[in-house]
Amino acid sequence: MKKPIRVAVTGAAGNIGYSLLFRIAAGDMFGPDQPVILQMLEITPALSALKGVAMELEDCAFPLLYDMVLTDDPNVAFRDANWALLVGAKPRGKGQERKDLIRDNGPIFVGQGRALNENAAADIRVVVVGNPANTNALIAMSNAPDIPNERFTAMTRLDHNRAINQVAKKAGVHVTDVQRIIIWGNHSATQVPDITHALVKGQPAPQVINDDEWVRNEFIPTVQQRGRAIIEARGHSSAASAANALIDHVRSWALGTPEGDWVSMAVPSHLGDYGIPEGVIFSYPVVCKDGNYEVVNGLEHPDWVKPLIERTAQELLEEREAIKDLLNP
Ligand code: NAI
Image (cartoon, rainbow, N blue to C red; front, side, top):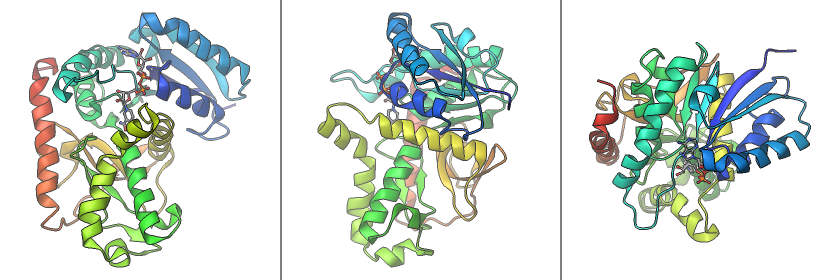
């Protein structure tokens, strides 16, 4: 048997957790012959709910689920972890501004960054999902000085998948016919979904779609606002699709991207050569191989896209300013 992979999941009793854990245990994340140990972190009041989730996981009798850890202590959850999926965060309250959310959730990622630094395995890889995901990833990274910066990422794969779906629908093709979509920047309404370099059935997407008006005034806002549209329709934020995107993010990183395609991942900004200020976590196109990723550099932006990219970078700088006291000097 292969050595089990230790996967730490925070916020494990939450909505995304409930869609995520069963798929990890079923082998969707690391493949059908890779055993896993789930190390699940929750806040103390949610431990009883977490116990219920663990009972259900047991009742699935998953052949690949080797062991489980349930805890409210990040030092226990991250002990020897190979992967840390940081999903847990407080949701935005009624009438709460984004900047209040940043101040509420930021401290969680100081403690978790430190606990990762002290306890995780040498090959630890981190994905932050809890919002504001990019800035939370920056806080965790900054508080884990012994872990290489490029191991910290934030998830923009849900936005990426949403963009693929919109392009496939518009072009009248299947989602597998759409490649090289890009999400630039922040996982927020300023993100820049971009089809400039995308392919539809191997042909340049802008030519196949041939509708600039749609790209600027429908495609981009639809992807940017999709999360809100789902909350309005469902009464709850996206959970199953977010869990699915997290499976995709880790799977691509661990097992590689298909030849000729790329995916979007928010990573330390200095890895890209697009003139983004250093010291933020910025979504770029990346190719993955053998557990590593590389930013696809050297792509040209059309003139009208440049200010959009500047705006999302500016928003990340403002978020960083709001939590600068939480960054390790
Ligand atoms: P939820 O509220 O259902 O679950 C969050 C869980 O985190 C709760 O069980 C809570 O007890 C736990 N939690 C809170 N503080 C914690 C801490 N310090 N340590 C460990 N656990 C903690 O929320 P849901 O729907 O599961 O979403 C989780 C996060 O993911 C939210 O911040 C949401 O905004 C974000 N999200 C991000 C997406 C992305 O594309 N990056 C997409 C969808 C959601």
